[in-house]
Length: 457
Image 1 (cartoon, one colour):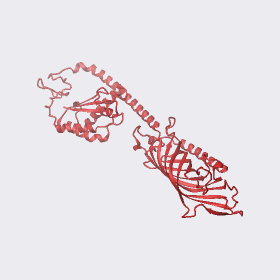
Image 2: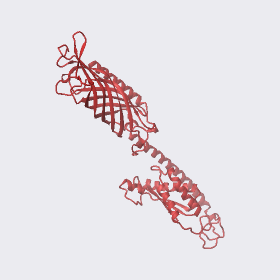
Image 3: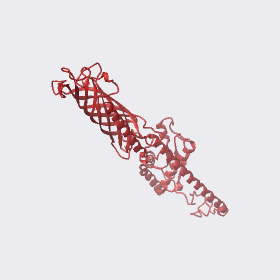
Image 4: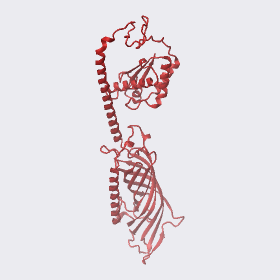
């Protein structure tokens, strides 16, 4: 068995090194980004694994003296599994495998030549099925965008069907079978416990290389067709294979997804956007200062108000307004007030209920636009005035919340104006976190406080 173990070790080391080098060349792209705390809906959680390897009576839990046959050999084994990842570090999987077990030199008859002695055995593992839990480690990585190796351990319970065959050496180089079970079809059902460990390497977006060693504890001492001692039989399955993740190629796997990378991307994106907004506001302020200087230079020429309506002649589009007439910013008489009906209030309530923005941004979701279109049409048809008041929860600094609330109110105003509403009849104000209507100590309360209020008059 020692030469076989050396071969197995060299094989596993070669696969691990090769897979590590391959995985390290694969850097995380924008496709790996998942909005933090968005749950499992943005991740692939189902997978199918197939593999093959070596099945042998050698294991880490029994010595040679404790085994019924002291010289186990290795044979081909193969299997598959279906796994559901319920948490980033916890999966539930259904395993199945087949293979053969062989060994020579029994404890009571090492040469296998005594009368009715035991020379060697062959056991066919017709099938084995188990339900196991899989614990994944190291899928959180603070140094790399994507962890290239995921160690795991697995533990479960199942049932297997096997056919043991034992043989007596006839002294002439041949063997005579001594059936362990003479009745029926010689097949035996028994329960067992698989316990193992392994490593997975992400070689493509929905593809992992799976290398593992599983020791199976049979609830019997006749797996080799022979009862010796008091311990149950055990056998190992050393395997390599591929795991295919089900789902969209746009979604990463839950078990290998690194949420730290998404949080870093979120931070960098927000920081870049904020800097851009700051630069934009600075440019606007510089222009306003320049315009103000020019305005102050000619202000003395623009102070005449002939009709006394409060609008200077240079801006008065309706000169000679009768005294005591209320006018708008263009010097034109204001229309008589229009009554706000219950149907108008219903349109406003619907717009408030449907209004949503991108996280920490003033970008309006497209699902909110149809309701805003109705508000814009209402303002055009009835020439109403509208006050928009933006509010936030208490997450973040006061200054940032004040800016965000103002930006969101201005975003709604800009959209209504783009649909034909009169900008002079819309007021957009931000109050930040200063006017909560619910507690900020709960997620639900904070969600209620993140709002834009509409006041129609």
